[in-house]
Length: 319
Image 1 (spheres, rainbow, N blue to C red):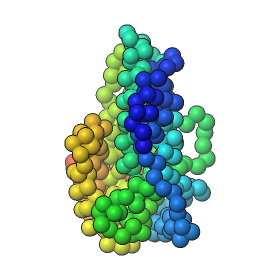
Image 2 (image 1 turned 90 degrees about the horizontal axis):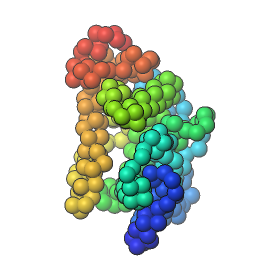
Image 3 (image 1 turned 90 degrees about the vertical axis):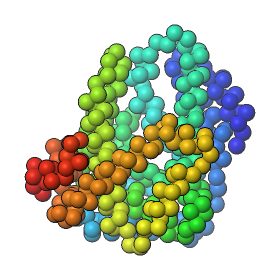
Image 4 (image 1 turned 60 degrees about the horizontal axis):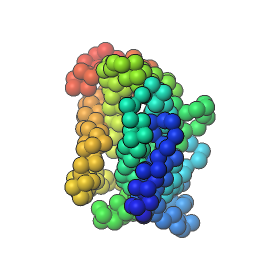
């Protein structure tokens, strides 16, 4: 980790865009220890076994038909940064094209530094990721499934829990996302269209809150259903893992706590909790397969109001 090299990369940001993407990635990696990827054969087999077992259990519990990506990547922190910078660049492309800052050089340095900070912080904290590769430059046949091995091992030590058991729990969570996107082939296009509409409204001098509201509601469903399915499908006790991980989110230095607030990670936690409460209520009333009806068509997504009143969704959809 080299903070000086990170700052130098930010200051050297150049080009014609509002962000120097190469320098942002360089700065993020310079300020982030990549971590070790020295996995034993047993550890590599462990990741593959966890994903395979999670797939089988989630299929059996949910009744959903899906598969997992053929390639599962075990990454270090730098790999994760590289895998995600292009996704963020695709999201930002319309804004970049329309932006006309008064001080372009100064603005580029500031924006590059902000992105480098975000990528570095997330790269040091993300445990696993199911990546539907939204807004990819070319159509893709398979999505991505990543595990950031140094973060998983570090978190297991911090939480004082068994590393293989914790790794397995994370695998189950990411596979639940594969189940959602596999069961709902319409979901990537739905999310992309809401994201693009919201970004377009920003570039045209206004802001269409409805586009981002629909996106947030859909993501609440995605995260909430994953929480429900993860808990119902996991084949070991998990209450201590969840309690310790929730507690861990409140740890850290003042800068780390500020970063979580700045990046909206506390809001994301509330999104999990609200969505999970909705789907728990639906599953308790009609069974877990009824909760999975949400992925049959876009019209079956809960509305913002229905998240607080699951009984109205049940009456409307009648799964």
